[in-house]
Length: 384
Image (tube, rainbow, N blue to C red; front, side):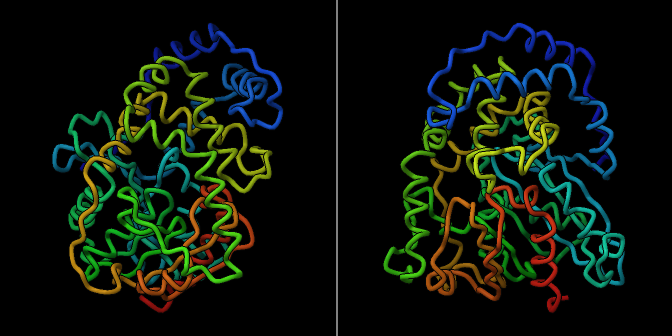
């Protein structure tokens, strides 16, 4: 394992500036509400900020304020942050992101989790925080090994935590990170102190696994309607990335404006922002995410992560009940994409905490970091 400093070569940034200057913008009309997808006027405004005001070097210095490392496992390059906790007995926790996320979505919770006293908390709640980039994402590149998916990532993470000296550890995350955490709690329950997730669904979801509709209580019916609406209007990206991920990759690896639209449209639609994406993310934060895909040329392998999961379905490691035996906390954010019925969650997980959050969406660590930190602390407090 080697210390790693983010330092993007200047020619990469010069090339980006040239491409932004040369963007051929599409026409757009009757799309003020984004019903057709990314609003071109807003994309043009954001691209202008990217070109003339966004300071990558300043953002790079901010990212380098954490301790970064790189290593390789099973032929897969792995980048991760490792921040040691400041407290009497820090608990190791691995935080897992999804798509279109990056490790940087956890920037606002790393400090409060690792050094609670410096953020108004109790040092007894300290964690050793490990934040990897998923294989094929960001600086966990270039990925040249086919077949790496979310449940195989759980195996890689179990090995990584061993190498870091953590025989037992906690896990948390959203999107793919929820499934990776749940797989750790399924296959490695004896090693996992507990998991905290907020995009809960059965582990065989890519093979059609769903919670039974009859398990939803009458007061949960509105959650079914939210999920049906999402399925009807928000899953085009999913079908494409599960079937032909390399085709959009040719375009999005070439056009920064295209990559910007592909990612920011999801940030707006999947966050709890009421249509105003900058209510939850500053322009700099939106562009940080896009930059981490752009400078590493990792859109292609991040999209292939879907293909690999869809074409190598999850297999159970045991037939015991509950499926996820590690102690589990589920946070229900109003702007999330999936909502498990509590009745089914109590059967499927070793459910020990169920938190209905007041606000927040799919990118909870970036949207409502304080609320998420408090919920994570509360869940693990009696497990130390």
